Amino acid sequence: MVSSVLKAIQILETLGNNENLGVTELSRNLEFPKSSVHSILETLASEGLIEKVPETSKYHLGLKLIELGNRAQLNLDICKISHPYLKNLNKLTDETVHLTVLDNDEVLYVDCIESEQWLRTYSVIGLRAPLYCTSVGKAVLANLDYSHALNIIREKGLQRITENTITDEKIMIKELETIRNKGYAIDNMEHEDQLVCVGAAIRNAKGEAFASISVSGPAARHNISNIDELGESVKEATREISWKLGYRSGSIN
Image 1 (cartoon, rainbow, N blue to C red):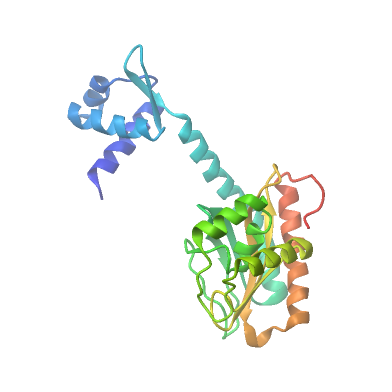
Image 2 (cartoon, one colour; image 1 turned 60 degrees about the vertical axis):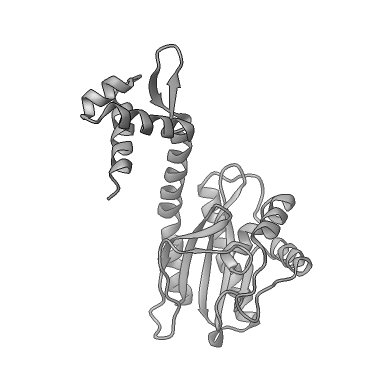
């Protein structure tokens, strides 16, 4: 473990239990050297995790922690609310089902129920993947503001991962339009060879697409008609989850 990080955590916890403490008080309470406390406080303050009161030179917790706490709570809520729908989709399709959240312009896998079939998709919670070549990613990307989506495409790039990966910006923009019209996205072996995925976006109470669900399976088990059927099932699940999260501004396209 990194001692400076542990010290920073202890300082945050101490500030959480006591309002407006200075360097001397924190040093005495935690038995840390003043120089160490001062350096950690300055670093935390520079990132907005704590704030310094100019008149007293004392510190209290910063607004950035509220933002981080809200994100953590939202992730907990989305997992709790979505899990029964993942179980239902898994039972309905006997394929692997994923839940992801948008994080730093990537998808972060936060929940998964694997298929019980011998030939199936395996997953690792905590894995990150690009937006442009995964069904969960494209589903979210298609529902972002056009300028935001375009910025992500241009900043992240459209790197070829498989033979089917879309690497042309114009084709990708048309793909996103199709996804918006259908309400679900298809990853046709674009991220992994011989793997097909169907995903749809989840919206929060503000109407923002911030998470997504997908059903994934070997390409050998899925054809076009089957894919569309899966897409409708996934879309219906995300529609209901979005409703439970407070989304009320019309249906999800």
